[in-house]
Image (cartoon, rainbow, N blue to C red; front, side, top):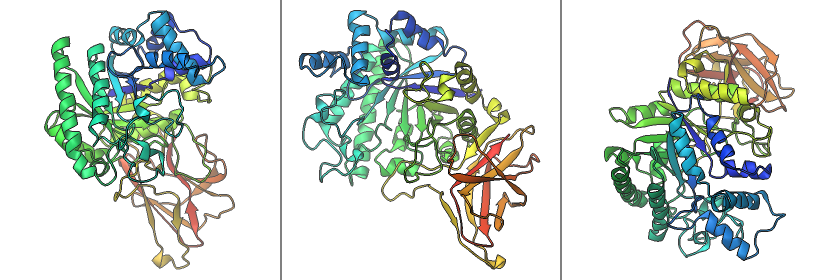
Length: 510
């Protein structure tokens, strides 16, 4: 068994209940947590704050006072959006029913044996381009020179992220952190730098490392004060980009934090648009060797082969999510961290169909499976070639697909291209296949495929369940399961005929 971290989004519970016209009371608040009893989850991470707190905080702005102000201004109508419904519901819970929702969750989690964490989004910029959005704090629209892209006209959403080189930005964030520590008796405090990791003014990232290091030291000091008040240790966790190089290039010197004992948990993760099946967890594990820091691998709800033009976002299935988790374990992760795997209501995940989170039996089976590395190894699953969605200046991006295999009629000089794909251990009961996806009508007879220096010769046309791209044709090559398949496989591909472009690739275990 391993640790399983579960992130509960800032407004998921409120929003999904509000848009379904569920009047939340004590029973609904406690039932939400009770569904996770015996689920395999060891650590439940409650996101309580972004640009403001979603509870009656004493420091800084909070959503309840904000809602009352909006009502006075006439900015909230009965026919307003789901966001307005959410604000009305959380106000009703706290101010009309006097229910302290997050405190109730924390107490219930302890009762059922799950560690309660509080998570702070350090630099949240949702709805950044909507100047009148009712979720924005007053500070979101105040001040000059507080955003990382203020030196020129904004060109993308990350230009709108706050610049932590600015003292007022750090002060506002610290007030939110202090209030959370004063309000909640938590097992751990998570600093979610992945909302957003772009927190240093462009070109100031290396100068910013010292600023962020000092800020982390201040946070650690506040946590130590809270430990004295509550009479127990409080762990500190961070969410960071997938590679050490990206962390440093964006201004985050986690080496300093580890050396000085500022962090107990590092979760490395993509941002959002796809799970990343090739995060260098083996490198992270070696970096953290001889430390007490837990290494968690962030598993996102979305998955795809690459950012195709006109793409439609695809959700993980049981098989693809378990495949990603198993690969993480095979590379040395101490824990899997689930992000955006919240429950569905009335057959819907937010407003979309997603069986993994809306089928209660499948949901519970999934959670218990990804919490257990041995169960993962024995499970039918899919290991997709994916990409990473976090950009850092000067750092190479991992996006191997689409993979173009150049035409060559001379077999002695075929140009081979490579894919690297972690699978973790593969149980003998499973039959592995290497599956590729190409555009329809493309002949693959001249394709040469090797896996771990063994040629795969026979193939057949196949179909894939979702997630996949329905406009592609898929071909499967059987792999011999001889107990010699390594935890990380390397695939070589070349063509002895015409150009072939590989748009999809996976190892499927059935």
